[in-house]
Length: 270
Image 1 (cartoon, one colour):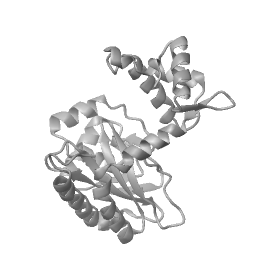
Image 2 (cartoon, rainbow, N blue to C red):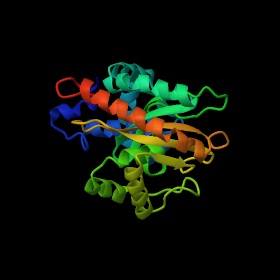
Image 3 (cartoon, rainbow, N blue to C red):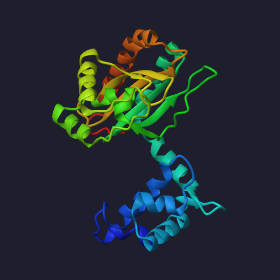
């Protein structure tokens, strides 16, 4: 790999050194909804123009980014190779997959597996609905925790001081009329989720999309995760989601118990 991307080896901190800057640029492109122009990346990364030009050049050289004919940037194929190799060895996914499929067979709707990463939930696996109208979610995509059932379910596992620390950092964006707009209402719902053992997305992230979710607790692990069943509102009523909540909780519990055994100390993790 080029010297520009390996400055961290000379003692630079990952968050402020060359590698940290390169990762911020890479993430700005990869996490965007479409190809990004230089000015888009400049605004997101906050890097000087000259530094950004060099970083982009090296990322393209390494195959991590591709520059299109219109001079915009998009993720490179090398990222797919790296992601595939990393994901193929993810043992948590191996543990969860049979349970995802059983839940899918029961409901016929899309089933997601997500892992908490600070104030976002990252979708790490998915079993697609058998229905004609399906979800547009993608494995690897991150969504805010405060407006997703699986995110709120994962939050419910956190100790109260850590939960309050995370919530204090959130900037509540009103995706729909049903989205939480304050820490107070979110914390009140988390208390309900802890009591009930499951969470709902009541069209909070996307209009006409609902889900029921449950937290996955893995004893002896720092992993904080969740599982959900998601479908369009015209097909999946709140009554139906409530009826499925027991099965979702059972699947989450089974994943957590099996993961604690198979991924316990000395056995590796996700």
